[in-house]
Length: 245
Image (cartoon, rainbow, N blue to C red; front, top):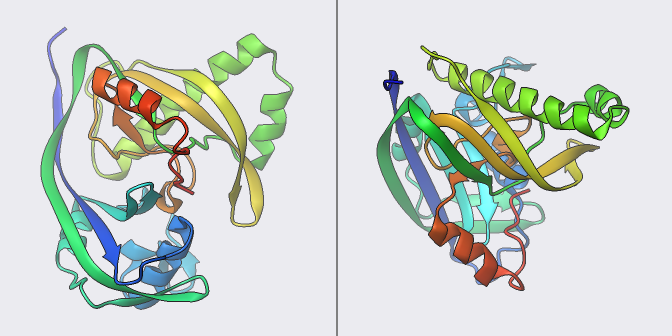
């Protein structure tokens, strides 16, 4: 199969460091709230316009892992983050007022295309593909049907996410999910079912791409799995799982 080039996407990751020594527990949803409040006039930061929710793939997403707080910008979201003057910015994160000491911007372009072979990605943060109604129906399925449902949701999540920033698939998309664990995850006052594991697909995706629900809150983002990342996961056991939500 030849490669079908679909789109080159601008991506920026902004890593924040704080002036305070103890910024508190990882909380991407609080970071989202703080920046949404600061940039009320820009719906890219909060997905609201004139008191209504904008139902689209978030082009600015919030993360908080073991390395600290970060934002991911895609397309116009990338340029928006680059244009922000970060150093010295004060943000209310929960009960604390934190001041940004420094911001490191990592900018690159990624050509999303179909691949000849399946590529493996690991979910750095739990994947939330189900709403509350679907969780109940999912629980009634047989184990085999649950596997098939997760694979179907992986394909649907990829298509929805890619379409959100203008990528159209010009060939046949394959995707499957290998689950390692599942657990309840809080989101807007409810408990959703989060899955950990690997995504296998015939797509070349950028690190940081996210799928599923609540991606702007730090859920569902992936990184390409390599031997180095596999070894690092084993070395990191005992340091704690990166907290992304």
